[in-house]
Length: 136
Length: 102
Image (cartoon, rainbow over all chains, first blue to last red; front, side, top):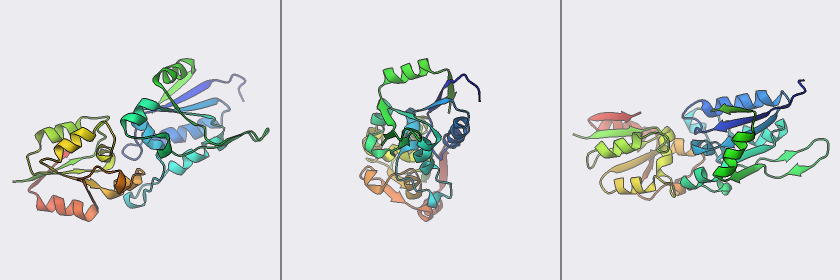
């Protein structure tokens, strides 16, 4: 493994199912997680719809990939951010979103929910301090 | 002559809904499906547009697309009718034309 650890930010702005962006992003996140980088996920605009809980795609004949978000903690993704304004303008609250737990296998440190609602200034800051931004 | 209008894009990303509502004639049915369903949820910044449209248009939303995206009927603005695939077919057959706002 490379010794340089970079901060990767995956910036998600699309709703799930209508286009392939959300699923593709998730695939790339899971691949990237295998390379021991510091991975962060950000959801803004319609991207916040990706995390809405209770998705049931049986009747539209598409794969429901939303349960995968709940496993991100197991792939050592420790930081997941959601833009507050995007949630509010869509009539959503943190309660409408899935919870994603995280546990450190060595120290057994546990975080019940790593999904964090943040304001616009924090979104900008996180973009600024990342080494690489992947846009979806 | 009546036209079935369909919108399958999110109102927060495209102006498909806005154009549809601007040009639809009074009494026309408007069916929202795929990412178009986000327009009919309560409490969004698009709620005013839909409520105003309900005064002179029949607004429908495709249930399976709501469910796929994690929303139940209770989250839908009052006056919007939740329909299934068979109703979609009926609407297409009952009206003279279909205009898809892509």
